Length: 174
Image 1: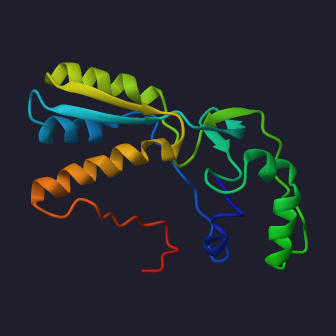
Image 2 (image 1 turned 90 degrees about the horizontal axis):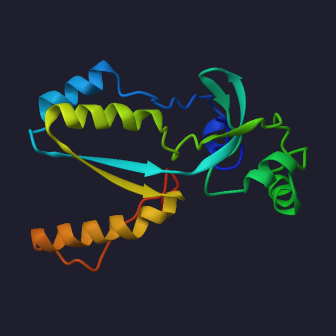
């Protein structure tokens, strides 16, 4: 994944890969077996958000852009907002040059890889655990649930439950 919009600050100094775990794997299975009490619960958070990608191989896809900034269409074809933003940033171009997508994949940061579910269901059954699935379509769809969870937790701890500090990536003004 490369996001020339939201990752502009980081991509000036580095390049990085986002790696999506597709299967549970031996280490995570062992962790669950060793740490999860029999009869406990595995909470599986499944965001169904997908994004246009270019397949490079059976296990490698490339995604330009990401959720929360420009739309997939703006990343791929450009548009007035992109042109204006690039001009403000001092770029010489007015659109990004991205490879044409040939399909959709789970979004690099948020999208859940379905192959993982089967592994977790098997481990839960073998260990006598319950699996709870929290399924939603867009990353921000879970925000009200998370806010209510914190509100409940704060009340349980005796804290005021009407305040919540929310961080937003590395760009925060305390």
